[in-house]
Image (cartoon, rainbow, N blue to C red; front, side, top):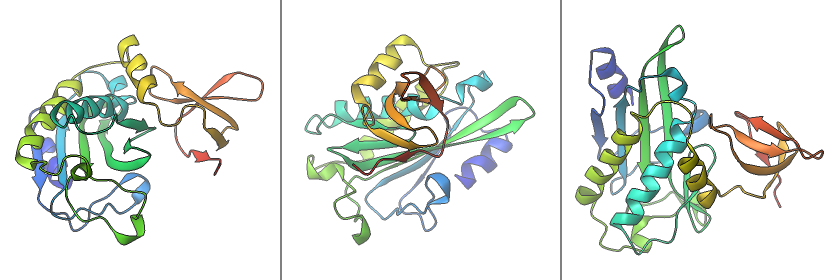
Length: 222
């Protein structure tokens, strides 16, 4: 992602991609470390969406596109789910993650780097036993060289879209929503009930009102 930001600052065009065989300091959301051993798909793509309001829903838009791309290339995969705001799940386990970082000049979004990590046939950390998943569990012959261009095309295509999620995207997200019906404790107490057009999670409070959540989600353990 650092190389992608440097290239974007130097004028790299929309869709410029940086791919690693292995990362020594991969990062996930909220400053977490992302294990990135050989055998996974680790890439960062420079995006230049034409409007600043495209950034808010970008991780969801990318998640939808990547899920469709993976399922089309690997039909033996079970249906993928999206866990707001940036996780790809298969049978409740994490298959991949998306991290979008924007560079701003006042209200103007100069560029976004879309970081994407997908567990394909890479070893998973012992501490993630039962929590992580890999493509080769269902597609033993998964080929990174075939997977990479399909995923890059999908990300490049949808990251050029501007504005809020449209009706088709909202409907597609609802079909893949891993949090639907889950109880949320913070920052709003209630039941997860989809997403809004700007990419916010909607939590229905005890009075039945949908409340938008932008970050800091805490789920009920049950």
